[in-house]
Length: 313
Image 1 (tube, one colour):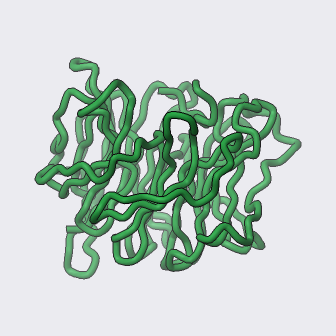
Image 2 (tube, helix red, strand yellow):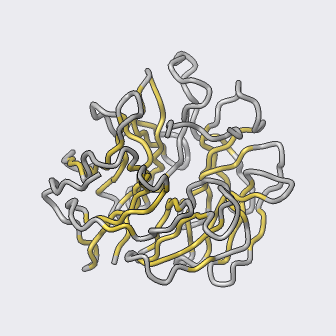
Image 3 (tube, helix red, strand yellow):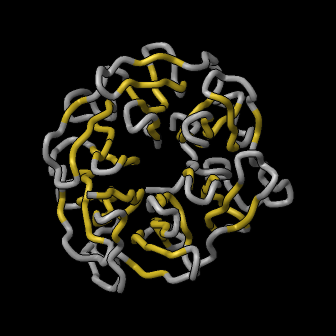
């Protein structure tokens, strides 16, 4: 799986983490996507933060990819009940019980986020005539409404910020224009104050057109910033930007490449997939951003282990 900006149509667990994370009395776990090469199938794995207790919680012949959890509820996209790569939104608990289809809105392969106590979700969806548009989904009823209609533009990987008052997302005005970089933008939920947050350095020519100049944003509510991956000087690392765009900085700099990621609910721990320059080996790593401690959660085994998400139960 090549790490790329999808703006265009295009293991074995090692228990080496010394600290098991507990938030508000509940244990934090990690779920991530992996590819079972024997079955030629994408599944979702749950593991303890110390690397123990791995379990395939989907175990289905369809493609299942998770990108978000709220407290003890895991959300994932799947084509299990429809055509190949025709994705819909599902939920389950951290053990894979009670799988439920949420909505009839077909989704893009995209990260997502919720607000209002986990009752409303922001997603990138599609219809028979449109692609990569933003929708709000009521998670109880499955009803949805489109936020902005711009069928020539690309909106993907949305995340609520500032208590759900704003949405950050990956955007470019002309979806099919390969010469136009996808950057992070932000707006109020009603579509006002639409503005750009990131600007890829013009001097950096290391990124091929399909790479992430600004990858899927994640909101660290406890620390008040947005994080994202970006390829700079030929290597992926994680960067941060404040919602007003005034402060930007680099978050990580391991010897590997760092990519898709998530934050613990206290904002201190970040879990991310790390991979070599050829993108042939992926593992999951966890890091404390306050003291810099980092450890592998997985090491070797499955070739593809990526898009880790914290779940708290």
